[in-house]
Length: 203
Length: 137
Length: 122
Image (cartoon, rainbow over all chains, first blue to last red):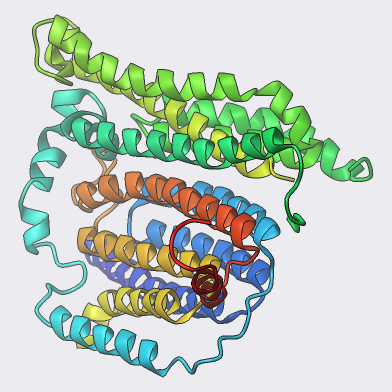
């Protein structure tokens, strides 16, 4: 009886997870469309922030708590601030395109159709015997804590098993930071050196 | 800028806790969700909040660009340095097991140091990016 | 039931096509970057979906649980999100520089100015 009740509760929780997942995905798609649709870029950036926050909740539903943490801090926080700063410098209105967007629409719809056809061969959502679940992940889950003393498998894989990969990622981030510094820093110095503003600076 | 009294008081109250939370996430990444990437972004977000509320000039004086670049470089060097240290101890690059008397303990130490390096690099880079963007006004 | 088992893949595809459409059809460089970040998020969604195991829990080991989701996609996407914000920042910085040089971030106006100025740097 007790085991039966627990079984029923687990079934119910799984169903709720699935429905939450679908509802969040619908919201995510709606905000994504809105972010592209809006002509006012400031509104577009704010909608993108909401989109990221919804994505963060979706990651929690899909068990990726570390990813949710990062997405909430990066997507909803830092990206929105950077977008707003850049839009303040480049102008907040998007001009209406003269040509009709039928060709791009056809290209993206055709790509989507091909990809949907490709997903028919993918394993079902959440299946425990999909190929991705059978390769190295069981090893990490079984031996990770004994070999590294870290219960959070994501941290142990990130820093230890795939440490070389993460070193590369950190280098990419560092390079991007230096790139932004060089792009925006040296340009302002060049303008200061030339001293006389050649043309009206609308920024 | 001088008008937003409520924002300034709330920000003054919040920023120490945001920083504390960032350090908690950094050091607690082994046992719960968290780690260097998240912690770096959270610490950078605290400084960005400070810059938005109190003005970019004030924030630049708290965290000058030279210091930020140094922090970012030190973070990457710390990560790579752990790998080189393992070579010196007789292991392979980024094989942390040789850092202590037994492999599991050494792995734990290595993961902690590496995560600190990641946190420094990410926090430094995000702040570099923000201040580069905000300087141009 | 087939809809429920593949819904996440299709949502990822929908997001990717929205992003692709924005990159191709819109002439504003900032809007193109927004489309690129939508496309990136679609890839993230695909990876995390592949890692999910029904009835599993977050991959933080504890004796109370026995079934965990796949930690590997989480690791890849966790780093990719931070990389995406830094590369987005590089793109935005380029857009700001283009705005300073050309006075606009609309692609057709930039091309018009380029063809009016003739070949080679001014």
